[in-house]
Length: 431
Image 1: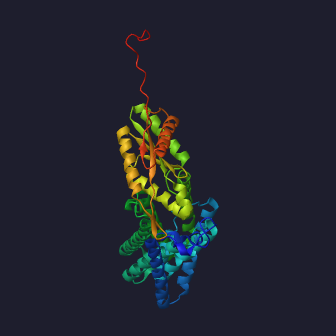
Image 2: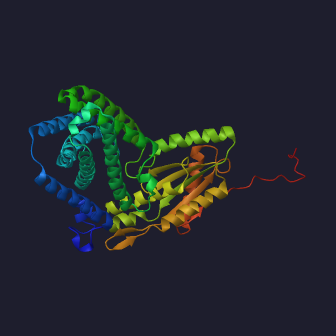
Image 3: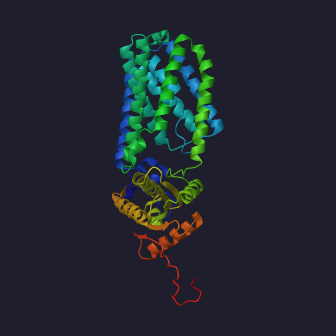
């Protein structure tokens, strides 16, 4: 939901708006409603289970020990660093034991404790995201805990390793993962309805990480049931795994643009150079597009940079959804994007550019009780026709882009290619 016009703190050419101070107000209305509903449901669950749970020292000590292990993992993350764009961790290794061994109310409080530590000790982000994450994880953990305790009379007998107990624990852990992913995916899709569901759900890497987290969570639960002191032995391998995962994400984050998730300019250039070398070797065709959002500065000036960022994210999502997995897509800077189309000839490249132009032209970003629409201009260049290396192709596509803007924007242009001079039949220089 975007901030309404009467909610401005200062004029647009002043300094800030209420949406700038409270980023949640700058989001889509359905997203705001959904986030508030999940947080409200989480608070209701906390009050309900708190009133019906009897305090026991053994449970409180176990909860404190698991939260202490989570804090150690968070400190390890802080020392390595966790910039924007790095989102996966192994904290489920401590949330799951809380859900399996302790009453459901502890599963509701566990993510609150660790999310506060992440906000304070690792990286401060907008508060509503931390609050929603805590609520989503808490509700998923509470549901898994309620189900497991309904199936198992004494959850501490999990340490005995009975086949049915392990099966119930795995099923509850899977339920936790499914619910958490579903709640987050709905929020992501509500924030950007143009994105495909496959982009906000699983990919192969996410499934692998979920399986690892599930195994760790169940293993730590069994260790806690045997002896709380065994957490000392479980902690080092979990920390090592988390640091390895974080290091891999940091490497990936160094290649991507923080706002759009596309390749940044340097990473795109490296991959584009590799594709061009491959095309030269195999003799395949290859096309390059430069795409620019028309009058993007007007969007920022009229509606603010938060809305401008939403437009960038929307355009990037549309590019991903309309292109093939092996097409190389990147943000070149500002409101400019670049696309490399391996195997595409000039007709296919133009068709792709026209499809992107039409689809993006139909996008709409809600703001101030109206809809913000943008158009794009694109320049197209073909290898061996407009250039033989990346610099030549970029130059040719850039000239075509400027031509599209001169002709009125919202169009696709291709550089004019001068035919080679033809020799006259009586030309003495003709062999």
